[in-house]
Image 1 (cartoon, helix red, strand yellow):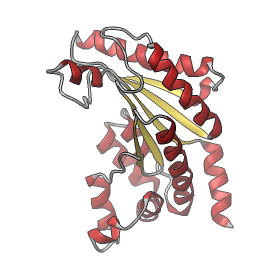
Image 2 (cartoon, helix red, strand yellow):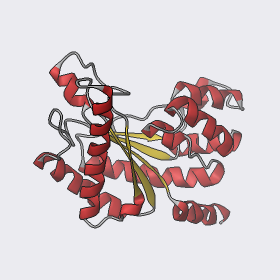
Image 3 (spheres, one colour):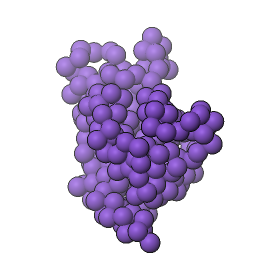
Image 4 (cartoon, one colour):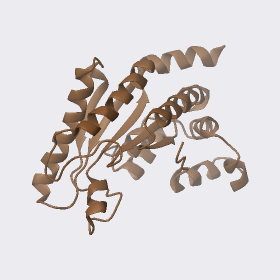
Length: 231
């Protein structure tokens, strides 16, 4: 997996609720960190983190952190997400896969799902890469998936917001056309917000014309995790 990040605010929270050293955090895996967050803070603090890190849940990161279940149940969910993230990274090496708390942030940029300037139409390359994700999403059906669309900085704010919504919708429509349940997906347009590269070069602008996924546990996964945690 390319990146696994402990965000500063989450780290500060963990330290404040009982982990005594940076080394203790460094030596934990994703699942253990999920347990640590939940055991000390729970879903209420998860919501606070979502607001701080994700602007009220309107980014992939905010959607994941804001939905923390926590505790032993969160650890079970985290373990399942570890496996799914690894599978995504294997089938789609051009994507940026991040395990965050109890979910997965997936950034599909110019190396995986790209858009031409000013368009929301999926390219042939984009469709081919989404086909690889279909297989993984079918293998791991117990997730909710939020799709966030983005643009570069060219064009007006109003146009960019609409275009980003259309890009997210295009991805959802394509995945649904491949047999995935549309109810699993929600779409959000973010316009030119949250750039991952500079908009002062063509390459940077191409990277910003992207979609991001927030993959989180659905109710069935949570219920199954609760049963497993009781064993």
